[in-house]
Length: 527
Image (cartoon, rainbow, N blue to C red):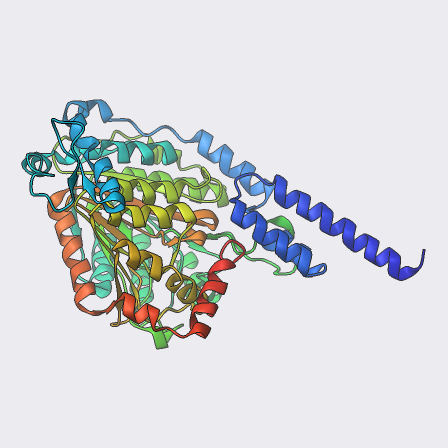
């Protein structure tokens, strides 16, 4: 057997082993398996190497073991569901009314009562008669099942007794955070994916130094990749010297050795601020100026953040404590043992934390549950739309049911790969009746979803595969008409500053452009 034959034989054995691993790997969509098999089979050795580096969601066995130990050591969040059970009963017939709307766009027949053998066309005025008033009167807490999905992920039930306000803009958000840090009496906890040493970033740094100087316990954590410039800067050292405890999540270390202890592109994308266990912030904003000087040509970054006060802060505290103790040898579990006051008044809210060590497909389940729940209106803003098949189908089905369905994306995206992949889905969405807008006033970075003027989800999670499988994310789901109205107004401002994307525009794209978009989207399960 000559040397060439030996090399070919080794290559075939390696490919077979990797392909078997691809097939046996749990929690992988068929499309993803097929895509990786093609890559492994068509790229000699490089395909196998690519799969070993990027094909599996693995942050390293030691990290996983430590995270599990930390999670198991945390006390459970006190459930207050029993306080609300009576308010969560919904009319059964109205829960299922939406099923008939799905059939109407397909066969052009709407639902009717009485005579079961008579079918009325969609245009019949009697088709929906008798139900509209009842639909309008349906209580907001008919969304109880949405909170059950969230509770199954993070273990947090919904809590009442919260107050909240949508902050006007990014600069106002930083100023509000600084003010709350200056008023802190016990502790300040911060966690950002990106923290830059710009005007906003330095405001937070100085506020932390002032708080630490007066005896407030300050803990600040950042992602090792997103905030690498901050970690390497003098500001990081100055905070540590001033008494601020600092930590890095998922540090890169040696880039050549890092892949052997877990995927290098698994990131902690969370944005958490908790002050004295009573105040928390949730939204899309990093600790940086809207001018976002590391990518100035896409500026301004357009974000939305909500400031909450109340029991919901404790749930975000749980997420922060679990992250902190996973990387720092400090036991701060006692912060989770103090009593939590809840109330049936105020805003009903729930924190949802997802990530590669949390249940697979948790984030898509939440998004899709919200889509399937919408009855009159669904509005989504996201900078990155690269859905899996079930999410794309859920969004189309929402529009087919007659729900006014809108998605707003940035006209210019900082990721040309994501931009191309997103646009490959436009034709199908438009065909289903989804309205598509592309915001032109900067990079729309807000991750928000409102439905029926009553429910909102806001946070760090994008509607792409990275947020679904690779990133640690945090969101807050809440039910409140007034606050949802404020978010909806912000979404409308985005719509007013956007270009409408029509079927004619998409159909007039060149063959080359459509080929490019579809090719990139096809590689989505790999990328």
